Amino acid sequence: MNIKEIQNLIKFVAKSGATEVKLEMNDVKITIRTGDGHGKGETTIIQQVPNMGMPQQPVAQLPVESTPVSTEATSVEEDSKYITVKSPIIGTFYRKSSPDLPSFVEVGDTIKDGDVLCIIEAMKLFNEIESEVSGKIVKVLVDDASPVEFDQPLFLVDPS
Image 1 (cartoon, rainbow, N blue to C red):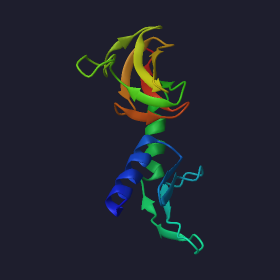
Image 2: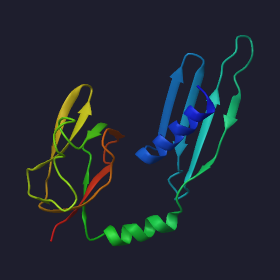
Image 3: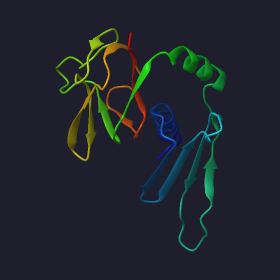
């Protein structure tokens, strides 16, 4: 795995909202941690390459700056009047049931209780995620075909 692939992996993990990802391949072990739960926006990667007869030691440790916390606080205040639809399971988020079909919902669409908002694939099972609220889609918070975690925000809905 070269440095460019590692940098792309860091960006992908930071964008996905995951707090920690561990990846092990033949002779490479990578752990990526984003933030520390105290508002710091830092991503750390540690790559270890085991050698026969030598103790393992970190090969690279790269801190990566992410967005400042102040912009997040501002957006939280603006978004407080909206209802957040969160992921009920871990899996891969899909906005449509097939690549050639339109998305279930778009920004500006009016939804009601029971409408399908998206699909989350978990262990080769495709789970339709239905709305539990009525309102208007204000924002889609996850990119199509992105991994999502349990309780990760997916959509913002204006209930008025």
